[in-house]
Length: 154
Image (cartoon, one colour):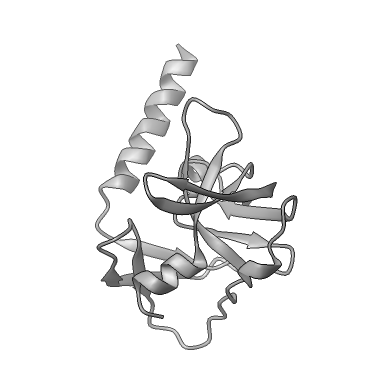
């Protein structure tokens, strides 16, 4: 019975998050900003967000030529509402799935982490966390920064 109660609580939390029209950006120091969706990509499931703040730092994009097999990568997020969770894995290569190129890693992309940056040991963004393969443990994929830059003409 307690498992059912936990499931219902988690399901309610996810339902509220999935259908909430507001997008919030919460910085590492806990500051919260309401974000506006600036632009969406027709070629991928991505959107550019903007916040009304000029003093926020943002990470640089990683140099794709410096990414080698076995490079350590990190994900950060709030899976199921548990804040400040960090996971790590390694770069396994670039993979093409359904004619789209992705960064493959075994760094877990948990619920509520999708859309967050996949970063290297220097803190540079390698890609945007995108998906996992549900019936295979340890297969996670991110949209490479180059693809994001192309999608938004950055």
